Length: 273
Image (cartoon, rainbow, N blue to C red):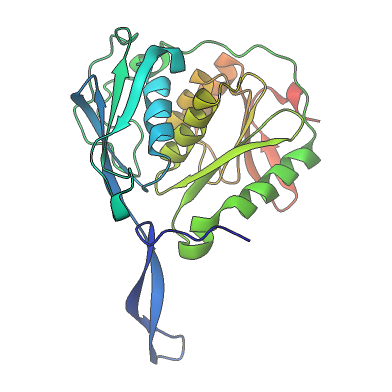
């Protein structure tokens, strides 16, 4: 039996819907929550992210890791929610990471709110985004059929998309196709950060992992994936020229249009059979 979606994440709303025959229909439509999450470092506000509530610790950890602020979970002394949400649960819109050593990055603090559709707002140059990235070096091999199975499994995990049709998802698998985790969010970069944060919390190595994306494999998604040393990034949608250039240079296998029995390998095809 599937777990029920909490009402503070998905709620019904009365709408007036125009039908193809020109008549009107009043009905309910499920709407996904979009709320700000302020991430603090040692009690000081660092950035505000528009996100779907849930997996906030994973999101904060993954975001700080892919931004180059922390090296891993060992960098964190304490993670705490500030405030409470529905029914007194720890679902407040502020989360504080207490570091046991200074941040590893010298990049300036973001100067903009990170909106749900933008993963790199407030960063000045591409060089700033990529200078902390290390090349991916391994010789894993994955069949095209296994990748198709991964997409099917991700779709099974998309409860919020099934309910609302408005969320992105990212699922992580190991090189043998074993499911690791899946996250949904209004922002595709948030979903990726949530899955990476999950691996940090559970001390799961990522160097032989595959990331399946429900949305476009944009540049910021490649930056985050390569920072996490994910070997293969596969999207059911397309990609960009800048993403392909980055993946080629740093050894990441980039795949697009992974759906309906097809796929297109843009970089490092030696990993795909």
